[in-house]
Length: 317
Image (cartoon, rainbow, N blue to C red; front, side, top):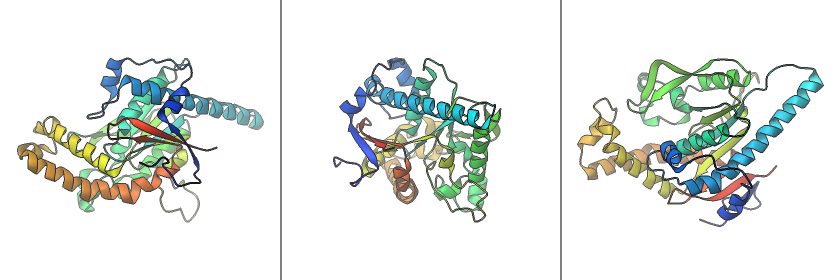
């Protein structure tokens, strides 16, 4: 990897890990190694030192942004003589499949809930907003699952608009990775959190502008802060194949698993299937839709082959 993530001049300030770690200052470590093991995803060997060096500094940065947003809300309320509750601070987390978005989201959620003010922090993933498999088949989109057109974008925008409007008990759909489909009539409720983390591969994706100017065109328009998890293509491919092979020996063996058939093939055949899925679907989605959104993020966390963050880019103000 080159010294800089982006061409110069860049809208980002870039930091090595030792320099970034100093921004933690006196932020206390509130997680134990056992808790980190519980929070990390399959094949994402994040260590306690990684949390200390990367995520405590990020947590402190987020605290400053939340505090500034609250201050702005109070100033505007005084100016307009308004009364009402501050709407949730929304953090978007984007990046390709298998890069560690889920682990980052869960680690941040735990760190943020343990701030001195004990804010209420909810975490929602975009998986539940995928179109059901039956509809994807009807539209011949099963091989495009994860691409922007496979999501119910209108439902995502409606959900986030309700969150930002301060509504109570906003429902979000539920997805089962075991059956590889949205769970019918199932939902989780988001009830006026202080912070909402919204995680998914395409949350920074742009779309066509509305011709009448009446609707909000981008999911990221609702974000107060956004994070992109980054790594080299070949590195992500290795992680994807490794995860697939681990799942082949675990979750795929359950008869109810959508991918149960892959647990019955040889190891070499399974690797060939994983590579085909990666090249035909996930790599294409990364190049066409996900990577082009990287420079829309406020922070880019760049990972090396060991899954550890080795560079941080922070958008200039």
